[in-house]
Image (cartoon, rainbow, N blue to C red; front, side, top):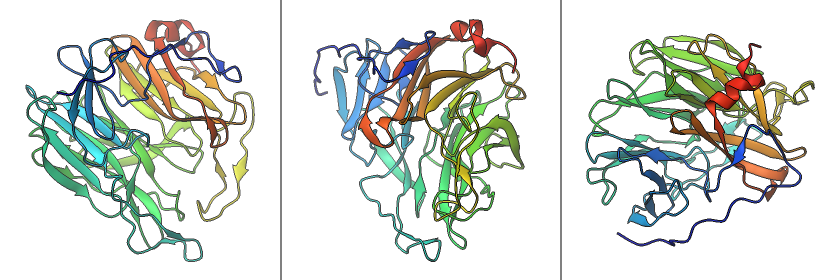
Length: 370
């Protein structure tokens, strides 16, 4: 056990060029997550060098265990933690310590040797030591926004994978019924497309009231596509466009203690505006909206069949607030962070870390029907 800096973090300074909805409050932490609520109420997070534990809602992280396996919180949506039986912990992560990416624009294909492996590792002693490292998916994989434990105890991780001819992304899931000792991969979900950011990408997942799983998938088709699994993520046999408009950016879907679903994402265009799309090119074969200046939050009372009116929680004109992490710290209290938060394009980092109550959302415009 290695002591970390015991000093509390300073309250975050508000960006004077950023608008934040008054229903939200600053979150006084110094990291974006992902976070795991342990059984004893403490909070677990990770750095490049290991896992850390906080007993004061992330103000300090006095307990640290070395675990350097390739995870890197600087890349949002690149790893997640889950707790199993007793002291068993699991981590699913992209091994960013060993990756190569190269794309041939002329051919529209990934170059040979593209490599970013999706891996899993587990701890049987509360994070002190880690073992049973497995490569879940070789080749090149990228950001994902879901690693959950279902009511049956099954672990489900969703993932995206780069395939050639034509070069595009597909998505799938991995399941484990023995706390990460063994994993099975689902079928691949393919929406077609051609480009280094085209196809089905950056999925997120939640369990529904009837035990089915819902996956929302980033696309370049002006909306999330959605898939359902009737067997806990082993297969996905139903795939369709959703009613949720979205730019080419990922969302994070979570099931709340109340039973509602909550989704954080970038909508297709600015509130009250119209879509602006980039022309087809190496990234995508269709005109695509890359709007990321507003981060929105919406709730569903019926497992995603309908959604309450989305609420813009933060706006950064000329910049971006994207790659969200949504975490229910306590029943009815949501933490929301943006993995990419910049004042101008990809320049001038300015973290966005907010907290908001579920009831406050219901009392706001997000509580009304769209």
